[in-house]
Image 1: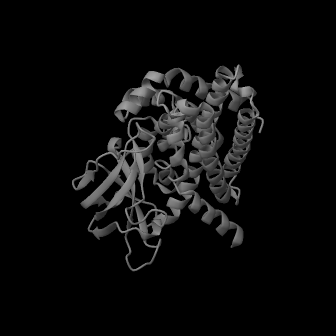
Image 2: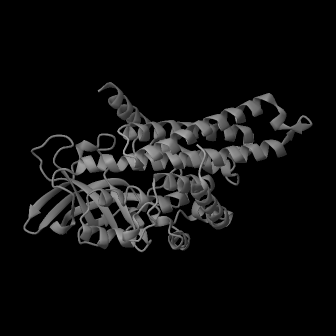
Image 3: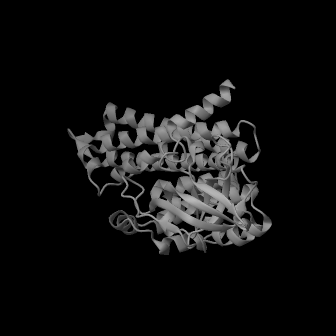
Length: 380
C-alpha cells in the first residue's frame, strides 16, 4: 500500500517519537525493574497517543484504524512493551465504551482515558475460561440499584496500574455458554476488589499483568455497560480491533528484528568477510523481509476494510493476527540465529524481541482461536 501524505507524516511522527523517547536506558530500566514507567506514559499522553483512535468529542485525536496500526507498528519496532502504553486505551479499554456506552459513560470514563488521566483495562479471561471465554464463572447478581459481583479474572494486562476495568460477568445463569453475560465498568478502588501480584513473565516486562479478584463488589446499575445479558457479543467485536493491534505489534517486532539482523550481518566478519555475504545469511534475511512485507500489506488493507465496515473485516482481523504473530516468531528466531551466540545475550535487542514476540501468538486469542474464527467464517 502506498501511504498518502497524511499517513506518511503520521508514520514519521510516531517513528521519531519512539526513536527519541524510547531510549536504551529506559528500556533497560523496564527490563530490570519490571515496573510501569509513569514518566514515559505521561509523555505519550501529552502527544495525544493515548487517544489516537478515540473521537475528538471525548478528548481523543479521532484517528482511524490505519493511523492506529501505524502507531503501534512504529512503537513496537523500538519497544513492544511501550507500544502497549499507547495501545490499551485505543483498543480493548475503550472499545466496549465506544460500541455501546451511554453518552454519560463516555464523558465520565472515555474522556480521561483518552487524555491519559485514567487507565481503563479489559477483563474477560478467567482461570477456567481462556480461549473458551463463554465459560465465564464470575457472577453479577442484581440487588436494588446495584449488582453484586463475585469471581476471579486472570491475565488482566495493566490491572496493577489501572483505575477502571471492563469486567464481564454472568447475569443470567439460566442461559448456557456465552449467553447471559453482561459488561460492567468497574472502579478498582471499590470495596471487595483485590489486585493480584504482578506476574513474572517471559516477555513484555514493564507492563504489569495480574489477577483481579472480586468479593461482593457492589457496582451501581449506572455502570452496567450495554444491554443486559448481551455483553459477550461486544467482547468479540472489541477483540477484532484488539487482534488488529496485536498484528501491528507483531509487525513492529519483526521489523525491528530485521533491521538489527541486517546491521549486525554487515558488521560481523567471519572467514575474512561480512556474514551478510554468505548465502545462508542473505537468504534468511530475504525471507524475513518478504514475510514482513506480506504482513504489512494484509494489516494495512484490513485496517481500511474495518473502517469501511466490510463484512469480511472480522475474518481479516483474525487472519492479520494469525499471520503476523506467527511471522514475528519466525523472524525473531531467524534474527537470533543471525547473531549466533550473541543473540542469546541480553544486551542485544534481538534477545528481548525474541521473548516479546512469543506473546503475540497467545494473547487476545491464540493462533488456534484465530484459525477457529477464520474457518468458521469460511465454512458457515
